[in-house]
Image (cartoon, rainbow, N blue to C red; front, side):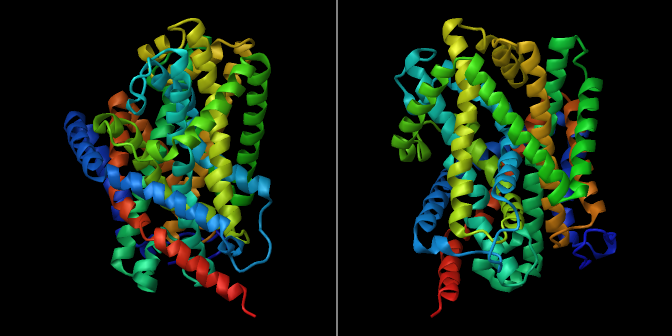
Length: 513
């Protein structure tokens, strides 16, 4: 492999780790080709294996995410939380920039799309964990938010970059190996996993999972913005419009990925955070601010009280497959490369800083974001039944945000701002994940630019092809994400004991004498 650390040298394809490329790019390519040839067959097979994945691995994933969070928080509050990672005494990046990159990368991966829709789904159809509570009533408000908090809260965030980041930072910065996702298996196989064929296959599985997880939201962006432009300006909601949106997005996040972590990615993330804060403040001021604050306060309290019960609920396996287990599969797919990204930007941070930022601060901020949009939607739905749920039922996910923001004063100004926000959120996911994939493929902290461009463009092209096939293409990809999470679930397992073991070892090293 090219050992350049400048990111300026040209990547040589003859030096590529072909098992990595074939498992990731090859399987993704086969999925697209097969979908073009016979979409119905592919959809049927994907749904079949989606069902098997949920049936046989759903409970395992629930325990994996639950234990990951508990162990991570245990490390954070213990003496081992003082351990500083990266072999430097101070962080390379300011705390605001650091948290901004972390927040924007995942929240864009779906939170922007689901924050208006998901609480409404649970409000109009109470989740089975809250059986007995009447749907679409005041009593259903807190349960709807609790279920949303579970799916976008402590467990989801923690699997993305707590114990996994600790293991990868140890392998890379303290043991001198390349920063690659296969390092998650280091607690089991040691240094040989970094060079053998198994390690290459592991790497390919991780890249495939995150590519699939990123392509879906890119496709959703094309559908949602196209729908919004049609509603606002009368622009035809057709494939040409959707394609133009995706091309624009790909150009933006490709340029950002090429300029690097300390330029494009960081700038987009900061703009994202400030725009998000501004829009939240506006909604609190001109929207149902008191209702939002009250709902957030009650829902957080209830979520903390019901945390274990909700996390390990197994009462309705069919419902779980389409909701909780689907989300766990999606986040597991993101887990290895998000851990790579967090390891890359967290040099000089303590274990406690990483655990609290990723496992507590980011989830609480996400909960508030969901309450801002989802709670606002519920407020207006209570006042006028059908005003939000109607468009959601008729037009699906793209209509939810439009319906919610459309009820606010100054909607004609706010809707375009929210569309810009969605676009920027997705751009931060695209650039961060393109960089992370390029890091994993090359083993370089600052990978060659043409490798970043290759993956950035590839994800956009696949998204464009799938939405050309109609909603079935993106739908099949969503189910495919869960299938790709099956091997990743085992790749993440060693971090449960590897993280604490590494923390103990480094604590003893850093506190000698």
